[in-house]
Length: 186
Image (cartoon, rainbow, N blue to C red):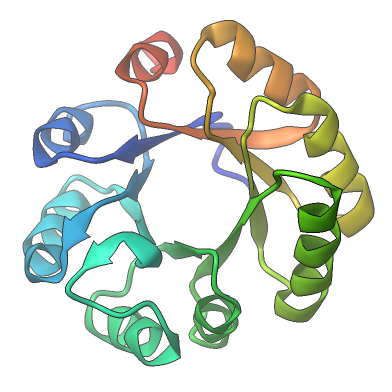
């Protein structure tokens, strides 16, 4: 499962950024920091423009990120995929047939071991490695898990993107508009 050669997954923090992306060549987008009351209109709008939406469950305000919330999101809004740091969200997303992206924060070797144990349990479709600028870690996680890697966090330049992709990342999640513009198909 790839993103039709889309190497950048724009991560949207503000509705005005989403509005700009609706008219872009990007098919897949990640929604961060949204209120549960905005979900219906935002997802409906994105789908009108044939965009496939990933929701970051942990960052939906007014909704607890757990298995029940995941079931609600999948039934009510049918996003293309869900991101979370929580095992219950990832396992429920997979059960409901949406793409499940397990987010892991790798701050030291202990976090690596705990994350790999968690990944054995959740079996996500993708792993988002943070910080994504740590290219050696991208390669290690990919080798240890066999799961496609998304790189996110501290990806600030085109060079950072290229290094992460060369290290084995399938795609990059970023809120940096300059990077979106650089990689957008003309």
